[in-house]
Every structure is written in structure tokens, then in C-alpha cells.
Image (spheres, rainbow, N blue to C red):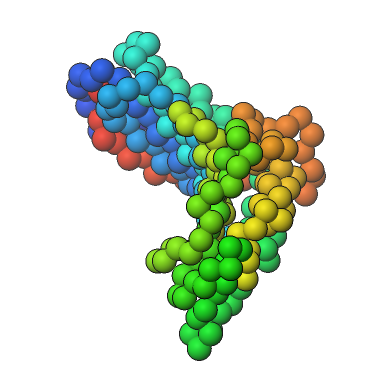
Length: 221
């Protein structure tokens, strides 16, 4: 589905860099495009999965090549992402079984990989893909189980948040990485793919983007 900019969004302004942010929500077949200013040029991508709920891909790009560089990027990226196909049900189901566990209020205590007791919280680990190191192991409050893959103006990383006993372990990381790779979401090292692999299973869900939300913050040139 090509990007179509409503006439009501034809606002102009000056800035050092123009920025476009594209967020695809594959779980409900919608996407959001935002245009804004940025003090520096950058490009980053992220994959966010909440098991049984959300699978979204974000691309944010800031540039100063020409007046239309952000619009051109957004148009190409929308087509790129809309042409990708993912078996969303399979991804979220497998991650749910690995990361989620029903814990009744009468049993709120959770023990993370470092043997830390986590009362009314979840376990977390962050894996730096470039250096192959794990950090941030421990207990988090006020959040939910999820997977976040980041790549861009920083070291690529994979963050896992879960609520099973000792679920923030290296073994869980390897299983999550394998699930993401099998479903075309990352490469074998856990880093975000540039696009689809050439061979796609016939069982993959073909996502048809029959609706979208366009958020206009104005174009800044």
C-alpha cells in the first residue's frame, strides 16, 4: 500500500534535519507515519513484541539531503514493510509459551536468573549483539513480558522481559533468538533483517494493510 499524504498535512517549517517515523502494527494491520524535526541525522530500527498481543516494527530516519528526503524515505519504507509477511500467530504463541506464566495474586514471588527474588515484578535481560555480552539481569516493576530488538545509532541489542522462574537466562535468550530467526524477523545473530529472505513458508500469514493511521505533526524543511 503506497503512502498517501492528506492535503490537511501540508504544513511547512524549517529545521536542521527532517525526520520520519514509521510504525507498523502487524497484529492489527495498521501503520502510523509521523513527520517531525531532529537536531541530528540518524537511522534506527526496532522490533517490539508483546506475546499474544503486539508485533510492531519501527523505523526512524532523520536527514538533511534535500527538502523531501524524509518523505521519500517514508514512502519507500511503507512499501518495504507492507510487502513483508510474518506468521504472527506462530511467533506470539511460541514466545508466550517461553516467556509467560500465569501467576495468581496469592503467589506473587518470582525468582530471576541471578537468583534475585522478584516480588510483583518481571525478570529482564539485555543482550548486546555486537559484544555478545548480557547485562541488566534482574527484576523490573510495572511492566509486562516482551521482546525488544534495537538497531541503529548504538550497539544492536535484544531485550527480553519475562515472568517465568529464571527465564532471563542465556538459554532463554538463545531460544528467543531462534524463534525470531525462524520467522524472518532477525538474522541468525539476533540482529534485525534488512528485508525478507528469498524463501518464505507457504504457511506464513499474508498481512493485508487495509487501513492505516496517518499522524501529521507537520513537514519541517
